[in-house]
Length: 443
Image (cartoon, rainbow, N blue to C red; front, side):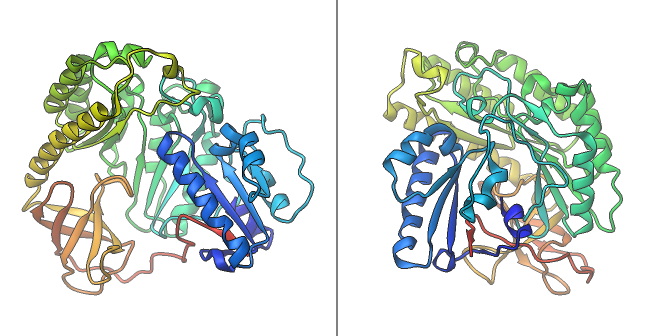
């Protein structure tokens, strides 16, 4: 949307008080996301009274789910735009008549104008949209539609352009990246795509990462490809959701903890030094104390490098909403705390093993807490998801965001690390500036 607006001559501002039109992009995946979206809409509506804003537009998944309710109950909102109507954003902002079909499946491509909302040294590329999996807790297929991949060369073209503009790290995303290419008959599509991305020539080091593995789609070909290319970061993000066969069956996910442990063993055997991240859901309908104990034992055995835990959110449009055996909120809260306490100990122990070792890191810039303290990331730390490395000593030369440096780890914490930079940095510029931030308004 930002790319289309800027290509039409409009200017973006991070200051809502300066905007003529405010666009709020929303999420409705779980209750906290919905509440945050609604709160932001109401907060931005105040600028129609106190600022120069003439129009407030709400976009994204909240519109797909509650279009009628927004239009009926939020008179502050002047227009709505769903996830399949993004090409109409300029017309809406300019007050023109909109002719669109919200049911047409949308998927951007390499010629779609973009404005990166990330720092200048990393970017996300969406390689697919939608999902065909039947997970009972998930509402994404209802609002994002059936799975559809971007064309192979479209992704390569966009990645090549981003690298040439100074991007150092590309993160491939989609609701289901491991099914990439299946819809147009491409076998091992993700592995083939990763290999091609690794072969793109750049004047600097690069990292290529992909997120969101579906466990039964992790093939040996995919693992071998990651292991074979230095620029493919040794990082597997594989949300398993649970380990109890009974719970996984009610989730319509299948498998069990033993199957997952064998897969994890194969991943680690194929990719030395790999970091494995997962996420779990606690409190799913029907989850018994025994199911939760089984999950805890599994987490202890798996020794995940990274793990997030989500409280089950009982969404009225999900298939799990109709299931019996609902778990009360207090039990869910306690289970989440207990599971995260287990993982905290595992994470700290894993981090301690890194002390004294030397690794390449990507310098991020000052921390949010202080301009005087800078941070960096290992390749096994995904942006905005995992912990970071705090720089205790910058070594020789000035610190520059977006530079690859070598760090010696000095201290280990629960999720973060502290280290000193021990190499001499080069002085080449990173690339042109980007618009950064998570909220954009239109002047």
